[in-house]
Length: 213
Image (cartoon, rainbow, N blue to C red; front, side, top):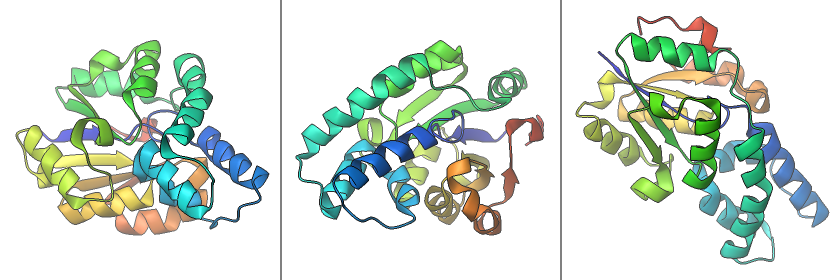
């Protein structure tokens, strides 16, 4: 049976627009220009990688100070308000009951990730919950990350199914040999056709999944 690996932000939970607004507002207030695809760029990097990227753009801050600012914005949101995306909770329960190994691989840190999963009642559905930076010291831009995760699951990449909304992460996972499923998120709706072209399957919400993956 295939091992299922899920991204968190923009895949399981509807949090990407909040992060996008935070980044846009912060850079706009500082009158710093940024590329149109900045969210696509920073999404796989994790908070530390995103902080470094913003500093490279011209934000006058230390990484630690910027991380503290990000945490102060996000902690309350994830602990109390960030919702699961449509049909996610019921579908995860179905897949778990069908015998699949469910796992999370995310750039999100545990101080945000874990309280959100527990509030939504799905924390215990997962066999592994990996924060790329904190647990594996890698980012989703590295092919080696996906190979490492497959080994940790006592499997191979070709027997793992990776779900993500981010085209960069999906591209790298595909290079590793994983089966890839693109997940719709409003922050990447301009990339739907491109994501479809590089993934094995694309879903607009989790009701489209059946228990025979």
